[in-house]
Amino acid sequence: MASELNLIPAPDRVERTGGAGPFSGDVRTDLDPSLGPEAYRLTVSADGAEIVGGDEAGVFWGRQTLRQMLGPEAFRRAPSARGPVSVPYVTVEDRPRFAWRGFMLDVARHFLPKDDVLRYVDLLAAHKLNVLHLHLTDDQGWRVEIRRHPRLTETGAWRRRTRLGWGEPALWDERPHGGFYTQDDLREIVAYAAERHVTVVPEIDLPGHSQAAIAAYPELGNTDVAGTAALEVWTDWGINRNVLAPTDAVVRFYEDVLDEVLAIFPGRFVHIGGDECLKDQWRESPTAQARIRELGLENEEDLQSWMIRHFARWLATRGRRLIGWDEILEGGLADGAAVMCWRWYSGGIAAAEAGHSVVMCPQQEVYLDHAQAHGPEEPVPFGWVHTLEDVYRFEPVPPRLAGTPHADNIIGAQANLWTEVAEDRGRVDYQAFPRLVAFAEVAWSRLPGPDQRDFEDFERRMNGAHYARLDALGVGYRPPGGPHP
Ligand code: TNX
Image (cartoon, rainbow, N blue to C red; front, side):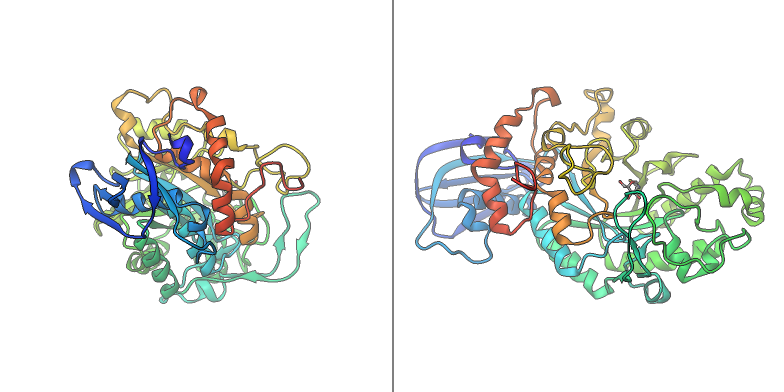
């Protein structure tokens, strides 16, 4: 049935009740909490359209389903068709599989203007995705205005030049690149997203991936190690050794930062990164070594864990929850902290078994910066290849957890789009779509196991209507036949 109406993501139950009639534009809505969070029942009959939601979000998702039944025209900003649209009479009962259905946009490697971010909120909402994770800081740029520490954006938001892709030998765009969001910009994004039942999760990445901050405030770095003076905002890609110093002064600085971040982003979760922190400088730094002894720690891993635990407690006393990349498990993690699992499944399994909430986003499955087909015509010959079908067969709950109580700790899944090689909205669209559509169905719908999934049916719905919806929305997706048909 989902297939006949080309609904995406596929609802739990669709029943055609016979016939069709013109759609007046009116929708009666009601709430019935017994349906559960984000659930809805949509009825279209000769009496008109009605949506009963388990909550307001459910009503909103019901509207998204109805919109798909009105034809691709309904995805334009204003209709170009004349006359009333005919809508089939149906009952749809639906609810999401996962509470966290996320998309991460890396606005640090390449800054994406506010309007493009707002547009992405619309695109997520149309696919019943409900978390926009903004990766706001990295070595190559700091993108959030912090009033107490203005140089973070005055200096940290701009880099001298940009490496073009990952190819060797390196090629450079010698023009400066940069930009940042003011706090009002971000409040606008948060409010716009909230109207669409999308939560924005900010990420302030620490203690690695912090060179832009260190370039702005050199005292944040390990200044007692050779080669750390006068760093610039990084112009290359990858992992570098310039990490934050593990001192109280640095912790206080980031508390100031997070104070302002919390005032902008009201959501429960705050992401503090924790990924790919090389420990070389901490090994070389007398200050860091003294710190290890002072805190009674064993090694540099413990030092990172000390920092992360500190922020986990700091956030908890403010009613928030820390989430971080799976490296935050190393050296032990504070209770209540959540883990975003990107390095295969093992970190997520360990975290779930230890009682932590987990969001699954393994780079081997759902990294949208990776190429989506083999072949030289793909603009991004980087990382693994994840085809549309691969993403459709992504299963967030690993077999080892399936059927155990720990499976409930997998609160959701996320697709991540790093932007080293996606420098503007067109490239972001191309990398994200259509794979994000397949991902949305994985995160929302109760699909069978990866091998039993009916990818042909998904493709039929894509070809039958969804590409036309994306066209109406103006999405620059990768065409089914490849970039050069
Ligand atoms: C790893 S995933 C990173 C990013 C890169 C990405 C490229 C993660 C937590 N860190 O810094 O952009 O690989 O795919």
